[in-house]
Length: 222
Image 1 (cartoon, rainbow, N blue to C red):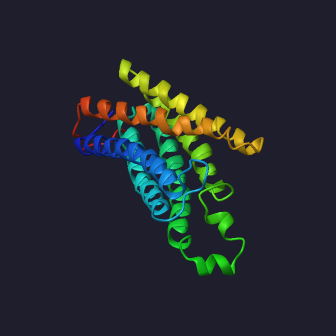
Image 2: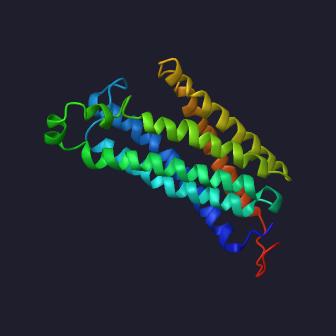
C-alpha cells in the first residue's frame, strides 16, 4: 500500500468536508420546510431550495475525493474494487449535481414554468422531479459503498468502516422499494443509508486516514 502524504491530507480534508455538509443539509432541509410553509408536509420553494441545491452540489466533490482517498489507501490486491467505487461515485456526482444545478438555475423562473406546464414536474422538490436523484443515491451510491467495503480490512477501525459501508449500501438499495411499489415512504429507508450511516462512515474514514502513516515512494508496483 502506497498511501502518500498528499492522499492522506486529501482523505482527511474530504472526509471532514463530507461530515460538515452531511450535517448542514438536514438542518437546512428542516429550516426550509418550516419557514416556507410552516409544515413539514409541503415541498420547499424559494431561497431555502437554492441553499439545499448548493449544499448538495458542494457535497459531490468531497464525496468523490473521499473515495479517491479510499482508492489510494487500498492495498494493491484490492485496487480494482476501489477503482470501481471511484467510478460509481463519479456517476453519483455527475447525475445528482446535474439535476441540482438545473433545478437551481431554472426553477426560479416563473415565466419559463408557466410556458411549459410540464416543467414543474421535473423542477420541484418532490417526486417525480427527483427520479434522477433516486438513480444517483439508490443505485450508484450503494454500488460505490459495496465495491469500496471489501478494501477496508486489517485494523478493527477498518473493519468497522467496512461493515458500515455494507450497511449503508444495503439500506440505500432498499430505498428503491419506493419506486418499485410506488410508495415514497419506503424510499426513506435509503435516506438512512446515505444519511446517518454514511455520516458515520465519513467520520471513521477521517480517523483512519489521520492515523495512517503515509509512505512516500517514487516507484510504482509492477
